[in-house]
Length: 105
Image (cartoon, rainbow, N blue to C red; front, side, top):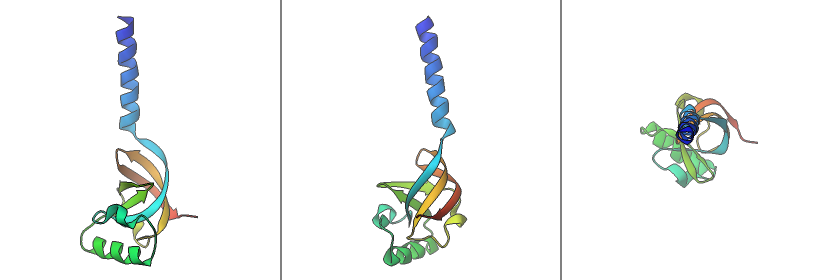
């Protein structure tokens, strides 16, 4: 019975950590939901494509280390299309609740 109680406690603790999200920062390139990882490298060509896709209804996303992250506050990414940025926020699944975004150094 003690093992079962311990297992239940550990499972509850792990589930709470997953649901709560992970705070941190991620560095990558601002792309769009249509092209995704195609714009993993920053540049003028990427910036033009991302801008056009967003005007067409796509959303900004972050491509970091081969992963594509959804971004909750789209307005913070205007002017960063196709650029390398550092995003600070809370990760939940593949979405980041953005606290701040700045040009990567």
